[in-house]
Length: 195
Image 1 (tube, rainbow, N blue to C red):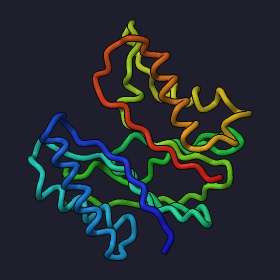
Image 2: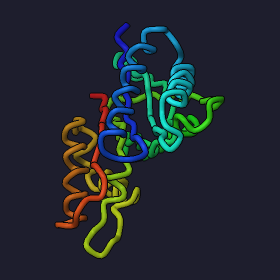
Image 3: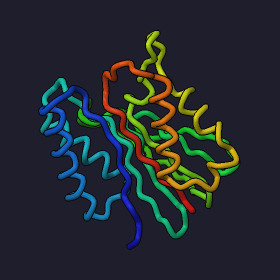
């Protein structure tokens, strides 16, 4: 119907077992997305399946949203993922934390959905904890404050910037922060902007 599903998640753990669990989640998501469920119902069903399929030591954090590019309306659930930042055209920043706990922890977990509207010039920045945990040579993390500062540095540019420009600015800021320090986690970002 023209809506787009947007997702960003992270599996506890590393290497092949984590990658396989994420592949399983994506397969389940693609199957369940066609059932006409609300976003909260969809996340509840994913939680049930992850709990049944994943080893007890594994869980998945997930931000899942349904976005209508025509109206800017978005319904979302944040299941334990780092709260995405909604950067309004005027520079205001909102955190999207409505939802519930990570998938696979408790079979009976319930999830609440949030609703927002992206106005022209707004951008939603979704990111993994690898971005905020990237450390400089002294061991100081980039942190959520570093991400917010990056978004605030360009008030005259970002209102007109597209998703690619905003994403590049974030990765450039992380690189400047960490200098040549080794990364301990992946850097993953997803930016959705409304022209």
